[in-house]
Image 1 (cartoon, rainbow, N blue to C red):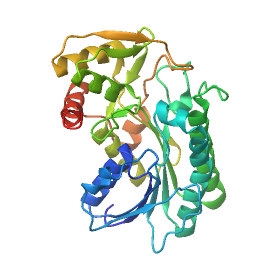
Image 2 (image 1 turned 30 degrees about the horizontal axis):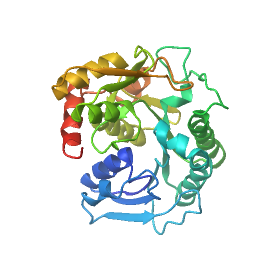
Image 3 (image 1 turned 120 degrees about the horizontal axis):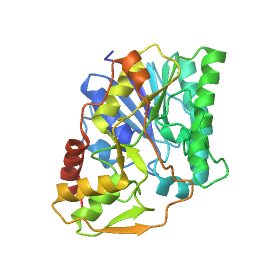
Length: 311
């Protein structure tokens, strides 16, 4: 599908800007809504402006879009622990009121609705790897609950609009994604390690570093999202790289790519930090014909090259 009119909430963020870039490249018209709390206008300034409209707006307030809309991508939300712990109420509001408003646009325009959900809906999982039919192990009153429960509510709201109003909803559960345009100090492990390595500083590892993550390069993620948006599947689909690495292994690879000796400083593990995180992507393979293509070393090398220009 191309030459569509698309709304992206949170389109100035890391993922939103890559999605915007890809849609513009295929010929779509894109309307970005962002209040720039965590999004960066510079992420959009480098893109072609001919079919791009940028509206500064908090999506938790009423949304009015003139003209036809074919797809609404709801990507607005703080996404890193530093951000959602700094903005806990805003995170809950964008997952609830923001989702409600974005769904209202989709309903009014007869548009398809794509929700950017997260692997955090699984919490600190008791099942490994995590399939879409796993309901999760989440602490609703812990500090991370503001993000986890906002996304779980958003999924429930999307499904309610699908069942009640017939809105064509798609839910993508995004696992750890990395790449250019991540914020230097957003608190996630890849930009943290890369920025420390480029500055010649020790890499900060929380806990013993044996906790695992699965890292998906941003181009692979965007490909999976667009395949899901064009599919007929209503329920959630995991999009992520199933290759699992410990945080210590990630630190070793980053230090090697940066050409520095590995030095580590350990810090206390954050509250409710997941011990394991790995997507079961059998549904994405079967329904979308999707799987990631970019190996971790290659993706980290591209990301390090980008960060070397901004550090």
